[in-house]
Length: 158
Image: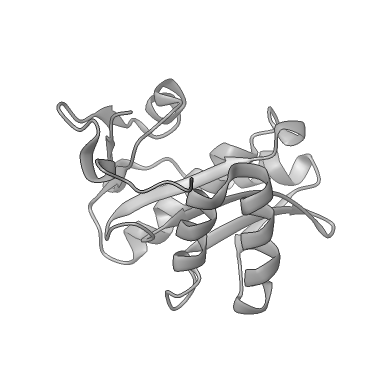
């Protein structure tokens, strides 16, 4: 899967994305350290050990570079940055049952605005799946020759 590049200085306003999620009863916010075991465990169960490892690293940043979407006390999605590499967005995921409510877009735009606040002008979305989603939501473009990129030779559990 290729990487994509996002111009952080042309990001859309996060307010409409947050409002759509809130209209669905979902709050998007930065995760905090006491939630690490809950969030990482949820990511492990929903998306696997590789993403859980990256999520765990995002919690080591100060403040954590992991954002979550919650409905009451139910975790519905997450988005990380600064996990595998500096200036990389991801991993991110929304539980299958919660898709179609704008949660993924709200998490994406929120996390990318956080990267912009940290001084980045561009962000790399590593090993994308839904390229059309990223292109439409934040104007991301494919990076030629980026497959397999930094993930070449990645060790997997046996």
